Length: 253
Image 1 (tube, rainbow, N blue to C red):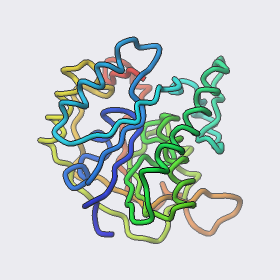
Image 2: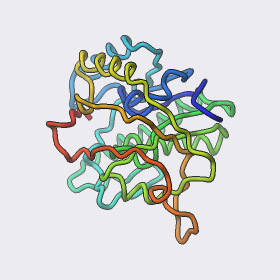
Image 3: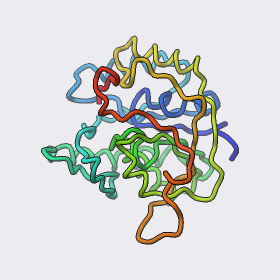
């Protein structure tokens, strides 16, 4: 495949579709968003629904509730699991892990009905771009479904200092890497819609890079391998880590 024309973009949260897939959006046939509500932010789900209704492209939202995993992972020791990542940060409530497990099953069930061997999926990478366990989980769900169904899958090439350790646990297959140029005007329009509805979760002065990269679904490194980690030989878009603070990044999740 030479590009995203006719592809299905599948992301975790509203605004992820434009943050990490701005160059793929104009040609995509479908956009699926997993999560809408977040219990610790009353009213966020409704604001997100209003924003999604105003978007200049169609969106299908699975309307699941977030598990609240953003601060539940120790990114100095990220540990993969069958569900995505282990919730290994100190003080993480058992309820977060339980909700994360439920979301895995719900995502797998709902997405299995929307994908076929002819599908081409663009989704999060297995290190979660800037570092979000929901992104990693969605990748894990789709990788599991890809093994069963056999569709093509590409992931975003964004990485941050927070996720570098996890990204180094993967290698890129030999297929070509896709390059895309984000539509800055579309990005600004969509950002304004989310901001107007008070549900934009990223930097308020975010500027898209001149070029994005999409990788074929990466391979987990297990034991000694002759291939190099994805970070050693793959073009990536480096983004600020979320640790830079609330003055630069606005997060509701």
